[in-house]
Length: 97
Image (cartoon, one colour):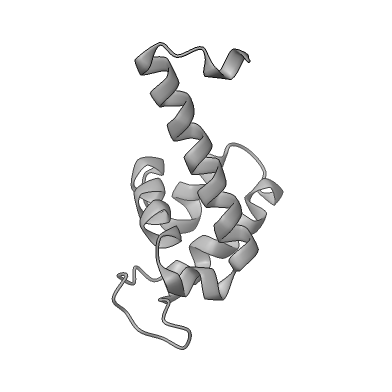
């Protein structure tokens, strides 16, 4: 697996690593065992670093072009988690309505 940086321009504007991350997210459930283990085996990075890379990636317009359905789904999931965290911090009961 290459460790291409976000600026590595390849056809479509995404590095090989970026394309591999999107492919992994599309089908990670097919890997045996925990996702953290599959991340380490596939990319040689910690789960924390992987999610940093993934979150930066899904904010890039090139990622939307490469896989619009996946990127929009990941963005929705991230927004929902952020709302849940915000509700807990603020003590809001919005989720109970």
